[in-house]
Length: 442
Image (cartoon, rainbow, N blue to C red; front, side, top):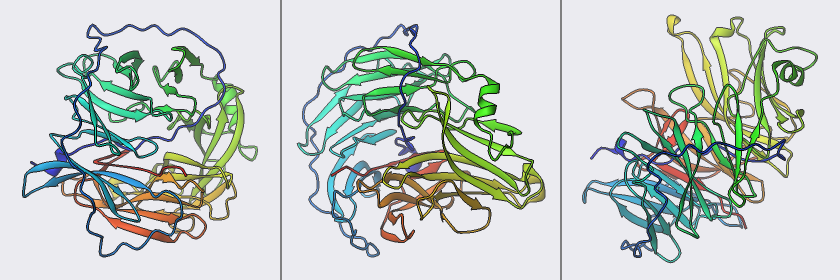
């Protein structure tokens, strides 16, 4: 069995929320297979190993609160068995090591106490890491022969899981699973956004409301309240309103995009390009979807390149740093032209050590960036973050191997702790597969 089949849940998009603008009913054209029942199973048979051998390069994590918790798919060549390992970073305690048949999607609960795992076409399983018990979720009614489970995410209350199903022959569907009732509920159809390789973001807010995209062109975002069962449709402001909102320093944007729309507590993220300044600059900023007003200028990216075709920036994820009042970004930068042989694609974490906003990231300068690092979660005290370090592309091309998990100080950009990882986790832009990290609160 090859390591590339050990795929798990990719990078979760951050989620946050504004107040609803208005409400409308959403038609629920449910698929013929309802899959409304889930079955409970006997406790997990796998015993968690008590410890894991310390990494020779890891150092103690200088943090007094709960440590980050990491779940990773591991292929044991000797036994030819796939394991889900859950490790507490810092102490390096092996919390659980669970043998499974496959793990296409895998996600830890917000407090790190539960783990959901599923093969793309098999049943799902929720593991209680404290008790050692498990619960099997029958997904056969929602995953047809050609369909795949492509998304799974926990609600903040940990009472719900959102499940996104990709169907190449029809619209993709969104479902909620209740841990209290063992029921699967059909929510809506949702659409893949921006390109065939990008699944529309689905995210949770603090009040157990899930946000998703149903129609990229007409309805950019819909929210569903898991408590009341009510949908709210958020209409797209017209082009003139958007253009007026995102002016910067008096400049009207030459073009703008919406790459990460679903951030409920933050509003809509827009990036835009201005060709009226030299050098070329990209702006990232937030505005409130309900009040249709600017929330914050987040960051500016600039380059000395004259041709805008030679330089492109996308913020793939964004984390609010509540205590500092600014944001931690995960950035994809593309520069050069294929025709000239100087094309470069790189990824990095970006933030302002001073906590001020906006800040400027200049192409080619290391300030305010940490190359080849994907931010995953911010510490409860807001002083540091846990991320994943990338190596170069693998031999298949277009895929980056995740080589370690690390904790970074936000004030100094110093790497406080680093834990090497096996060859099981990969970054398929813009998603991570084979690994998940959370940083539980105090």
